[in-house]
Length: 283
Image (cartoon, rainbow, N blue to C red):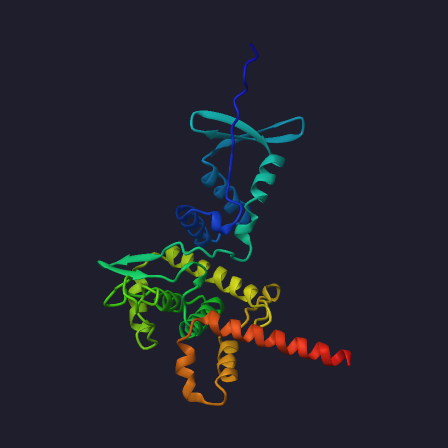
């Protein structure tokens, strides 16, 4: 009878949304260390696949081999094989595409703060504008105050009274956003671990990028190659002025609408304008 060879299967996430919360936190902790990219990816490979890199490597026929251990079993991979496996995790070095909220609830000082839905589906235009301004400020300055503000804007206490079975329930568990409160609440977030705040920042970054792709005619993509980030907050305020019909008293009502309602209207209007131009160009 032919002896069956033991097979070791190594699997790793292929996208940001495939990361578990603990894996995401692991990546954020290494981001904070500011280590070389290859070292980051090697450590993530070991963490995600449940293997451990042994200290010694050896050469054979001009090839470099690395010894790994998984549980009680040890195995050897060539440098080329390790390179291929590490390449699968290169998405960690690119723009975030994380759209699943890793922390729907933050527990602090016996209080719970509730975050937005996946893909920030339930945020209003008002909170999006304030979130965007602080997101951009943190990107430029790296000052943690703006990061605390971003979290305080999107993660808020539960609405009181919370009555999910009521016909008047709007579907958002969070209390209505008040731009006069978030700065005071943000100060308390100094106690939230930095790697967790960075995970929430990564989620918002991925969700806003998805929003831009969802409404390509309204937003221009980020010019990340030039180290610049599009100021979507300025664009949103321009949209408010464009749809208020010259009546600034309507601004408050517009700001409390779901951000996708406004963007959907603007996307449709843009398509109509483009179609109108195409028809008249043919004439």
